[in-house]
Length: 251
Image (cartoon, rainbow, N blue to C red; front, side, top):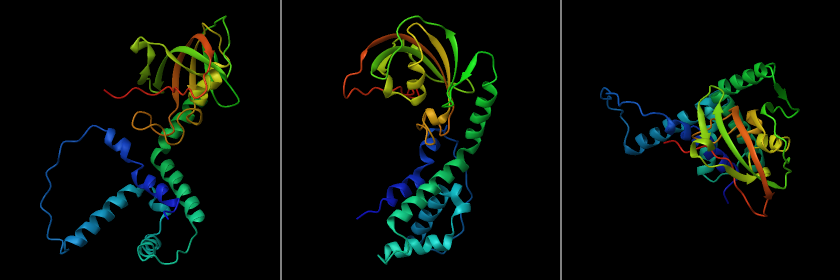
C-alpha cells in the first residue's frame, strides 16, 4: 500500500515546476566539456537523480539531514521496518512543504502584507474582520445577493503591481456564477453589494488562492485586486452548479 506521505513528497519535488516552466526560456549557454566522471552508466543515472532531487528540495535544505534522508531511502527500497509511522511522516512532510513554500515565496507574502497594511489607511478603503479590504466606486440601489443566489458581474483582476491577469470587460462577456462558487473574498463582498454597485476589492491570499496559488498564472501568497461590478442577481443557484472565476490562460 502506498503511504499517504507519497503524494506530499511528490508535491515537494514538483512544487517549483509550474512557475519554472512559465518563465521565458533562456538562450542555451555553451558549456565546456566535462572531465571523465569515472562513473559507469548506473552511477551517472543515480547521480543525475540526486542532482534533480537536490534542486527540487533546495528551499528545504536547512530542515533536512542528508544522512537521515539516505537512511530513509535505503529502508524504503529494502522494505525494512520504518522508524516512523505513515501518520508521522504525513505531518512532517506537510510541515516541510509549508516551510519550503515560505522560503521560496516569503518575499511575495511580505510584499502583500505590507501592501494591505498601507492600503488600509487610504481614503475610502474599509477593512472587514476577515482581512478583506474594499472601496466603493459606485453605490447601487438594487437587490443584495444571498449565498443561495447566482449573480452576473463584470470584473477586472490585477496583481498589486497593476499587472492584469483576467478581465470580463476584455472578453465583452459578463461572468455569471453562484455566489459561493468563487474565491472567499468575492463570496463575502458580493453579499454586501447591491445591484448596480462597483467596488474595488483588495483580497489577501488567505481569501484568494492561498499558499499554493494557481500556477502558472497566480503565484503562491498573492494578494489580488479586483474591480467588481454587480450587474444583477440572476436567480437561486442550481444544485451541482459549479462555476469559478479563473485567471485567463496566457497567450
